Length: 397
Ligand SMILES: Nc1ncnc2c1ncn2[C@@H]1O[C@H](COP(=O)(O)OP(=O)(O)OP(=O)(O)O)[C@@H](O)[C@H]1O
Ligand code: SF4
Ligand SMILES: [Mg+2]
Image 1 (cartoon, rainbow, N blue to C red):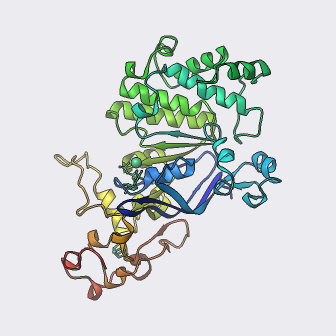
Image 2 (image 1 turned 90 degrees about the vertical axis):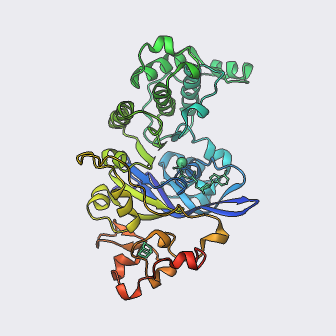
Image 3 (image 1 turned 180 degrees about the horizontal axis):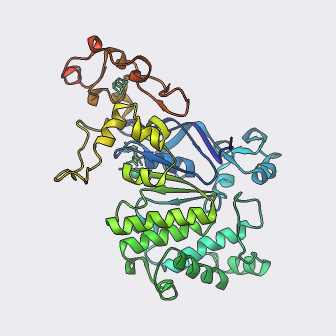
């Protein structure tokens, strides 16, 4: 069996707001193997982006990671910090939540990269796209002088002492060498941007949405990461460009062997791209399995609902997305209660569902699990909650 490159256990992130505590991510387990694409799918507000930001250590105030481990396998990195941070190191693994922030952040862009949900806001509007990509290349070059990503494959010129001196003379934006600029052009070319020599000198507003998304892929790849986290990388794009960007990610993964955590609300994208998938609801992974487990034998009613919401393009008039009835639940701690969070939308909610289920084996393989009593006990009609139960009980157990 392959050892995962990333092994996340019990990841829990809260926002401590004026309105109260928001349970954005609760007890999330995820593993990603080398070269694998793992999907996280769920409706808006289910905690997908906060999960990604937690892995990248980009959760901002009033958010806080309150529990869990994010173990990254990199023997060289583990050896380099073992003496200073023995509690964080376990063999080839480093628990990124147990090292100081500056150590963790040194991996950003080189071991882990992220494609953000909104490309417009993740590029600085006053710096050319090329310069921003070149800066990411520069970060990777500097990192070659210390232990970095397992899959580092760079043949880029080393970061020399003269480069260091220049970078201290121009500290405001970081010095970008000529070779990094050339690399930016080559990256723009790799992601299929026409006339990269000309495009490299343009500003973000001169790029179309699709082009900017591609440029963001180029920027994320500049660091030659082990793990690429792609948060809704194609949502804002029209169908043709969407297909092209997904194809591009597939090709680049085949070439570079990186792992991808793909976040989306679109099961069609999951089917096309992923080997395994976690279905997220109200901050938890409520079902996990291979793509065929999830599509062929879904165990959780929420997953069934999501699959039922995929437009059927073969049926005349059937290409409208069917939303799942009911509303996405509040994640305010005071309103969540202790029941299954899907109970008020679930067609099979039973008395026992007023106590939240834990993760249960859905098909005897341990690799397909669901947090739902139907998996362990089946449906007991005599236990069904009466229609309107949650309206009359104020929406809580
Ligand atoms: N800065 C913040 N302050 C307070 N609450 C936040 C903050 N960021 C996220 N949340 C809350 O965390 C929960 C999960 O949000 P998240 O952005 O992860 O959802 P998502 O699954 O990515 O949704 P979408 O599909 O719309 O991108 C939501 O209830 C959201 O309101
Ligand atoms: S635990 Fe109960 S309410 Fe929750 S999804 Fe399963 S059957 Fe429905
Ligand atoms: Mg999101």
